[in-house]
Image (tube, rainbow, N blue to C red; front, side):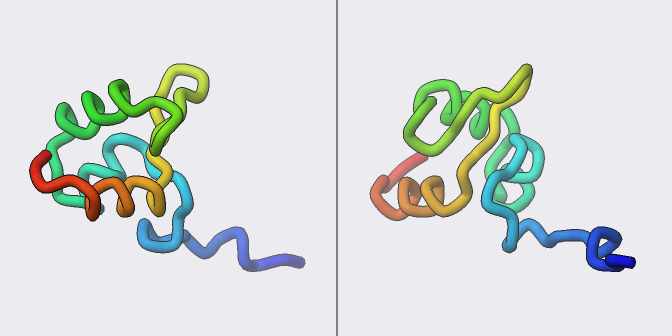
Length: 69
């Protein structure tokens, strides 16, 4: 049997984060992350079903490029 599926994945290992996970990981408010995701759809966020997902590596690159949030 494969026991690996019971092991939780840390936020730093995930490729995509929900709005709430991204807020915790990057220490940015939920409303601000949601606005950024809505404004940058296709750049570092996608809309899947009824939720936005943040592509963590691309969002990290975006944060390095900008000077203010």
